Amino acid sequence: MRLAARMTLLLIVAAVGCGGSTTSPGSGGNTGGNNPPPPPNPSSSNSIIVSNNFFDPSATTVPVNTKVTWNWDACSSDGYGGQNCASHSIVFDDGPSSASQTQGSWSRTFATAGTYKYHCSIHGTAMSGTVVVQ
Image (cartoon, rainbow, N blue to C red; front, top):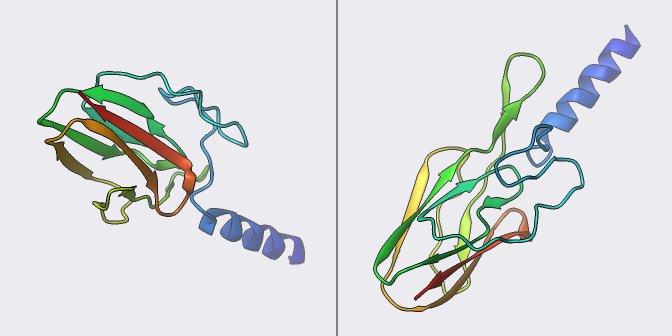
């Protein structure tokens, strides 16, 4: 009985931690655990996935006046038929930010050329990205 109580407590603590990690590779190539996401491959996408611990793509180039949308996909299986969802937010170095959320989307239109760096307020610069506007 004690062993079952300890295992239950351990599982609860693990589930509450910062959303855990994924065990299946996402489109960003991250295999979970302590493996960092792959180096940024600049893309020309105006849609970015917010995953458990990385943005995919982490770097994108778009024309001036482009609306870029971040879509949350930060839930993973808890192994018991449920899901663990990690909260993330997007904070730009120049000020704008999204709400902290586990699902949904958020958009920003870039009216001026430049390089816009952003990160997750929960994970800091370990989860960051860049939008280059040309």
